[in-house]
Image (cartoon, rainbow, N blue to C red; front, side):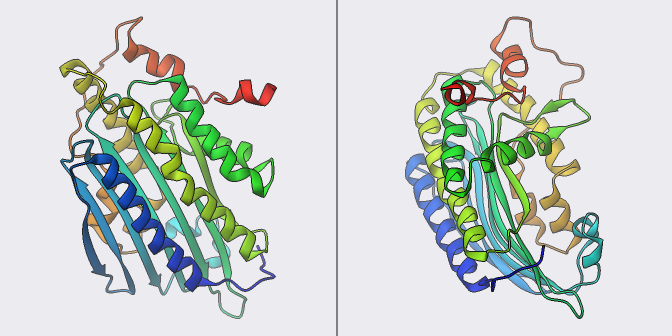
Length: 311
């Protein structure tokens, strides 16, 4: 993962701040009633960030868009498990991470993250990489929404090579998988980490393409579904399925583990959790229902662009 170009941390920092601002403005306009409240914070160990949170809006029951730039004297265990050569190295991480939990069960939950990490081992050149992606978690699925989501992701990746989307789509399917439930968390999207080709500008460009395409991927879906009629049955199913989201974030998510182990700000780290959730013992959907169709048709890791790819 050696670098042949000079990483420009300040350029990444400015892009991330602009991205957070742009996303919040677009989602706030989409909600039409709620507003993001900004909360700036400092981290005693080094660095800080800005958390922007929306609650009880017209569309979004809860959502947050976090920016952080933090530093540490030693890499935490969650980061060195597959990078043992960086144990003990001072590090710096910055990124924007968001999760949106809509009110209407027909509007899917969405998650996105773009990040930059740099560590400096003793007597060695800095080691840096980019990561990120976005994924969609519907409760009641629609084929056209899934195709649009993945088409937007593919188009964002295409300038960087035809292999980028297929590889990072598969990585997303594998990463956002609840092994104890033997099911995907949602319908996937993109996930990548450790991305360093040795060309900073190109790799930074990929991160920007992913981050800047999130609203284009999500906004049309929200507009199509936000006024769909729903009742208590759909609400109960939404709360039940949100339990899967909580299970993944607390058991498997690397970002959550890294944040907690590195002494991060707990309120910002756990911002991704939904405001309300339920677990029902041994609950099963009735066969032939839309609730059953979620796992049978949508949560399958399928190629949503297979018709396009065949053309």
